[in-house]
Length: 398
View (cartoon, rainbow, N blue to C red):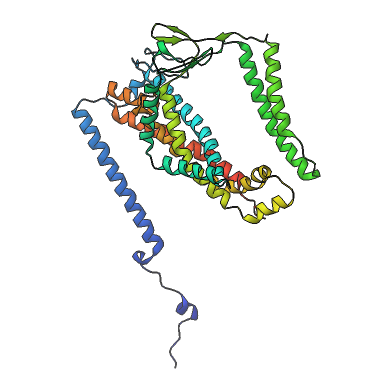
């Protein structure tokens, strides 16, 4: 009698390996161990910090934000006095950071684009000047540039009593640039809202015009109509409200000017330093993006009769943007983060205001945490917008 053979299924059935040889289970164990180590280290740091704070009788928490700040801020976008709370003081600092960052980003993109395009100019002198600008400004630290411009504003301009007056309503001195502005009137608010509505309407009109041109081949002058409406309609709103012409003209009273609008040397130096430094890097990004467009694209555009400006606007830049946007986002983030150097020249940005708050309250941990959170919010907001724009400009695969 022959021995009974095991079924074929039992022979082919693989044996289950032990868990230390199973890659999935081993990876899960390692992740759990790493999480435990991070949790233990975090607990140790937290408990050690709490112990040291209690030993030195240092209060913790954010309850101090409701207390009176008791310090003035030179530049504010909203009403503020020393009697306001730390919360409002921090809000003023955050708005100052947003102001210099937003204006700086806009000017940097404009200047960097112009320098990047001129870097590729066929004119030898213009191309070399753009190249020299890029090489020099990239290799001078931004902090030194801030000190340089700050010294220029304070050394090159006289005191308020000897202020330069190129024309009526404009004064230049070491307190900044002071110029006349229209007096507050409801007509100005109506003009602003009208302009905003025109721009929104122009955006949708431009989209409709593109769809119409794609369907019929007939172009629609949406940009020219929007530009004309942006001039005519706000002027009509101004006329409807009585066409006010009164101006708030600055006057020297005592040792300083009263009235008008003052652009401080600190803000000007910070803005110039950030724009000039960052635009040098943006120029190289724009140059590389333009050179990434194939020569055949340019020759084909010129062959159908497009002018050089049309070739750049309609053919080259739309394709170059797909290469430009990702590194441009990094430079925008760098400019926003470099604005924290404002404390070195006395501009009241968020870091400077928070530093004053820390010196008064001793809440260093909370203050540094607020700085980290605010700049994280600024960076993530910028990245979110630029990622949306990058996705919008990406090529649609068929």
